[in-house]
View 1 (spheres, rainbow, N blue to C red):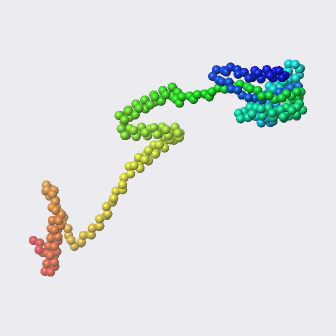
View 2: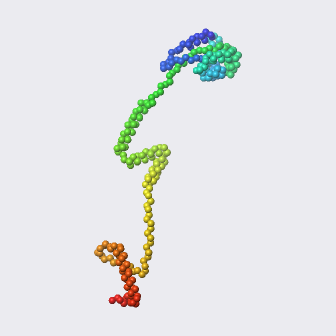
Length: 288
């Protein structure tokens, strides 16, 4: 068993060829070995995982970094060789982990047997000291960041920019303010329909109609004050009717002249009436 461990250590110390695009990195590991009863087929992954969990509770290394290998012993029937490899994380000493195992559960068969009581009936027959070995791991460099824009994206952006420029030139040369407003209303209506369903177009039209009605509000028209009522005519004043001759000129005299003539006639009739009343004559007697 010691010869086998020496050969394994020598093999591990030689770096294997790296796969394409990777580099081999040397990693320290602590190997604990023991023998137990049974055959390798009796140690499924769940049982091996339980053994790794028990070793993790003693070393403080995560169970995911502990690998358990079980093989049939070539010299003894119904005996298996169990190898427990601890991958040492960065900042942890491999020698410290090995010393912890040798002074702990690997002190003897009975100590390890007590530690593995809940691992599916593992019966330990022999225990070996933990050793420090070297393992090489293939490490691949991080993938290089891809280009910000692929060729397809560049083509799409270029074609879109050219089409937008052509459309802008066409709009600037062919469209006026009214057409631009109609086109904007159409685009907004389509977008509102896609965002809010079927009612978006009606709401857009209603909003545009309200905006138009608000923009065309006119100032209220001032109403002139009412003119004062005219006084009723006096019953003693006789307003003569004016006869219009056919063919006469339609030009009327000035308003001030007609008022003066009317006042003169009223004064003259009043004077005649007062004289007749004074003399006691009847107007009918004077008639020829």
